[in-house]
Image (cartoon, rainbow, N blue to C red; front, side, top):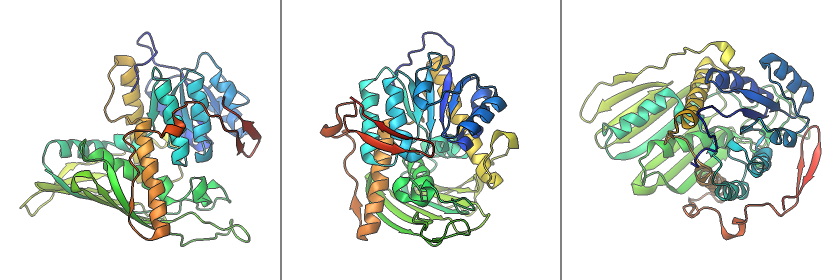
Length: 401
């Protein structure tokens, strides 16, 4: 991560460009960590105004570009729809803002972000990976590092949950090419978590084999000529470096259930996560030992997500940990190694795209080598191709030169 441009121990002022749900979730967590949110923007002006009044945010810019021109905004948190992630992130970096962003919808887009991050190396460019900071998973990482697991053989993730679309009307979530689907929205977090748990040198994903399926193609709100094409079932196998094998199974057809199990099996023992409680059993032992029990100490006001409390607990605790690490980076000048960069986003996006290709070909697919970063075609940190982007409220033609 680049050295912060902040010249004192104060925290950077934050601007948020994202969806209403994300903004409602993030602002209380940011303020609890001592950050000051100076401006917010969504695609819905009326909703943005209500959120600004609710959270006492002083600036409501008419466009996200106007937000990026505010002098009292130092860091931008980008949590838009996937199709807008790259555009907003690129513009934020060229405006001289530190940036925390989710991964976009394609390798080409993340390469543009990565090129800008390398060009403006004095700015911080952080990939949003809140799952790494969920207390259960930080304890699991410590357990792996303490050699209680030994050489990792396999990592298996099993998740049963409800629909990602629910009773919503047709949106980008129904189209995998726009960033929808269980693989993009859920699987990406667990793929990153698997890489995070593996020691350095063992966390590069080499090959993938993937099966995707859509069981629910219509709902009472989505029917007729519009159908749901995004996957609600994922079965993913991965071969990592140093012979580590990982699997991710996600089923989004289980109603209100949210059951998560992660098994990390190694030479010296195994660790098991069940609904965010962590257990360990050494090699040759017959009983599991409770290592960590997750407690929901956060109030319901911290999150607006209409989800199972277990999921709300994981989201809020993860975001708390993420922004605590970012706060430490600015206030103390200490960078948490758990913070991810755009290089991590590049590798993750390559894995996701290869997984979708594997599904189409019905065979194992090699992951392109991303250790060297962006290709030669994207070494120029500026976009020179004109891109058409549509939102619900506007259609914008943008040329980066």
